[in-house]
Length: 134
Image 1 (tube, rainbow, N blue to C red):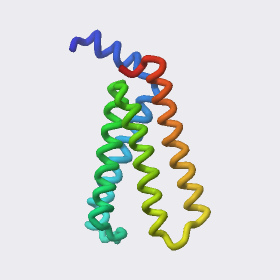
Image 2: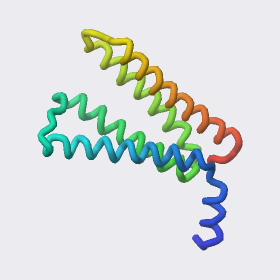
Image 3: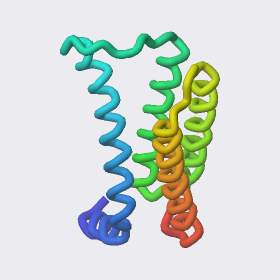
Image 4: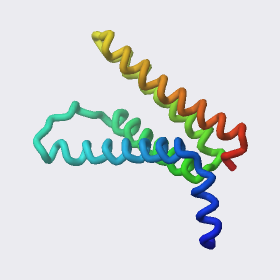
């Protein structure tokens, strides 16, 4: 790829794509780091079973895939974004069934989180409809 193509790609990449991709990559890095550093720092994390670890690793993989495909302006980002949203809902439903008490604060944070993911998915859909994603 020559220099002219690189300049053209970065000039056509919307600022929100940069922000969303960076946010997702940073969240994965922070998530992985917290799982590695917290026990070494003496911080007790909730015990995780095999299903918890599988969901956690799968979410990291999906979010990394979303971040990279969105940054590369691939149409695949739309489908991965929908998968991330659906996976988050499934994971939440499974978690809620095991909770004894659900607080209002928890529901507000949950609503905001899913609202942000839904807005990001709608933005990616708009990018796909406008032909920005290939």
